[in-house]
Picture 1 (cartoon, rainbow, N blue to C red):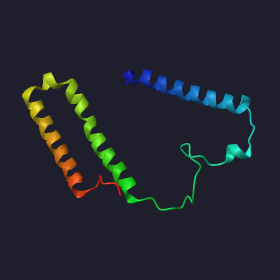
Picture 2: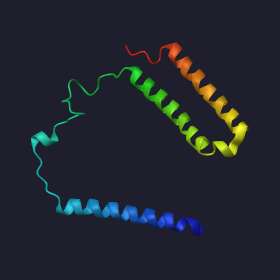
Picture 3: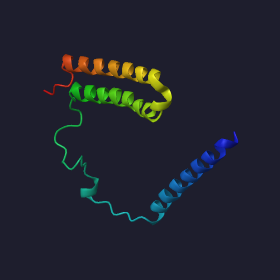
Length: 117
């Protein structure tokens, strides 16, 4: 339990600092709202059309595939740190894991999920 005290102290100090900075901004910061500042602005481009337009499913599919493969690849880093300690068993397990990952990637390619229309 005593090992978590520094983490708790750090968390409390970070939250206190964030609240202090935001409070000071509210008290001291200038307030000059204008029409131009209140207009919507997205990624350097003025918005065109309605916000209620449908987004193609490919946006979500690509995002989900990115998250899937990205999270799986995160497991490779700890393995790379301990590769010498794990020996041949660890090497075989990682090759099996990467084989499953490659099979999934080839399946996605074959199904045309990465084809942008």
